[in-house]
Amino acid sequence: MINIKVVYILWLREMKRFFRAKSRVIGTLGMPLFFLAFLGFGFRGMPIPGLAEGVGYIEFLVPGIIGMSMLFSSMFAGISVLWDREFGFLKEIMVAPVSRVSIVIGRIAGGIMTSLFQAILILSISILMGFKITGISSLLWAVVFLILISATFIGLGLIFASRMRDIHGFSLIMNFIIFPLFFLSGAVFPFDNLPGWVRGLSYIDPLTYGVDGLRGALIGISSFPLIYNFTILVISSVAMVLLGTYFFEKSEYV
Amino acid sequence: MFYFRCVIGNQLSAANIECDLLMCIIKVKNLSRHFDGFVAVDNISFTVKKGEIFGLLGPNGAGKTTTINMLSTLLKITSGHAEVAGFDISKNKDNVRRNIGMVFQEPALDNKLTGRENLDFHAMMYGIDTVTRKARIREIFDLVELTDKADVLVENYSGGMKRRLEIGRGLIHRPRLLFLDEPTLGLDAQTRRHIWEYIKKLNKENGISIILTTHYMEEADYLCDRVAIIDHGKIVVMDSPKKLKDILGGDVVSLETDENPEKFISLLKELEWIKTIKKHDGFLDLTMDNGEKKIPELFNIAQSVRTKISSISLHKPSLEDVFLHFTGKTILEQEASQGEKNKKLMMRRMGR
Ligand SMILES: Nc1ncnc2c1ncn2[C@@H]1O[C@H](COP(=O)(O)OP(=O)(O)O)[C@@H](O)[C@H]1O
Ligand SMILES: [Mg+2]
Image (cartoon, rainbow over all chains, first blue to last red; front, side, top):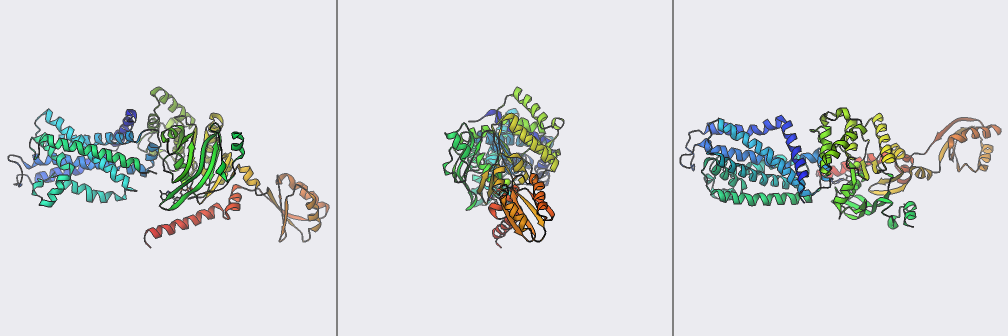
């Protein structure tokens, strides 16, 4: 059912495209780095309500910004099916005698890799800025969370892509899906500060558990236990990937 | 028995098309496709024989691409039935896909990859092993004369080069059947010639069956063994280009004569190679086969009765005339009115 060679070649294509488009690499890094720099320095030393004892704002912010970068790049990777469709290449993929699941897995593998690359770059820059991580095992845990966040949102991106005819709807999705998911997740402030009913929405935003998991892994302080975040993200990523595959298979791409 | 019916059984009332698998690479029966109530392909039936170049000829919006996309499993069918290379297009998609090569109407290359990487991608998607892949890709680049551009990014290719690369790509996995959707759309005359020769060669030397769509009359005429003229989603008529043109009764020789060619006409009426004679304001229109060979004879006859011929013209029927004959419009007029219709549709959609 899943053809490894097909997954590999689709992954390889994503890698080549990504690393050839230098402007894309730099462009996608821009926003998270600006957020990190301006929020980080802007609120430095200010008392932020809801922050755990002994946690500086930058320490709190870095995992959040990495989660945000994951959200953006993964949603983009899922929706980029529409770009392939716009430029005709999707037909070449779809007419090949390979299972549709392999195609989806290939795209997800490529998307995870490019997102992960960006996240690790941001983390490295943060470390240069003075962010401290506790050790290798915390880094490994972080990578696990990054992969799960990415799979979840690539799946979601695929669902949106299958519902849209062209890329013009992208700004709608940007403003009404991606940004709310980002702010609800507590990436830049503790979501406990949100009013009650909005906090309810935070609880159904998978990124909430992604960011919290990253905090747990990287700085050792989180709202929920690590295993709890992990379980929820495993469920959300499996569900989103299955749904994404289902919608991808169902729609026509010519 | 079956074979015989397949060869002669191409009448439009295709309900009784029988075609043996050994003979036919495509069988289509009552195939339709609707888009939200709009009928893009309307109950068409046809067969394509092995080793044949079959053409779908029709104006823009006739439903050619939709047909091709259904046959190649990219679009779902609304109703009907079709088999490609012996496999049902709805039930056995992977087997259909394995046996076909596809060249789309619009470019379907990854511009950010080189030519070689595009072909590599394709070969790997079709499960060709590394050694074979390298050899075939080299072969293909030679064939489409792009060896020196193999490692250039496709975004730097010209339109004709992209087209050639795409045709080459469609052949890497050695398909039995090649789909060509408007293979020469938007190319200059010279490149078009080149690609025509290339298509002929593929068909002759490698025995690949080809189904192509076009709205260029000369293209269908030059390349296709058989042509189905398609308009508004329906097949209007289907036969070899020669037979289609023969329907119109052969060449028209138009003579401009002096006032009273009555004697001349009576002599012409005795000739059995002249099929029809029409007189209209000083002109005589005669239909016949091989008009160019008969013109000297016409002069001799005219001279014998002292009728003066002041001008002469020969018109060989083209597929354009066939299209006009069957639809009452030229293909250009048809496209213009189709454009109008689409504009109206758009306006309605935009709520005006
Ligand atoms: N995805 C689609 N949605 C709605 N209408 C479509 C779609 N694809 C094609 N059509 C319509 O179907 C008709 C046939 O289109 P097409 O098969 O592309 O024609 P051709 O290839 O002969 O130019 C056109 O009127 C076109 O507007
Ligand atoms: Mg078309």
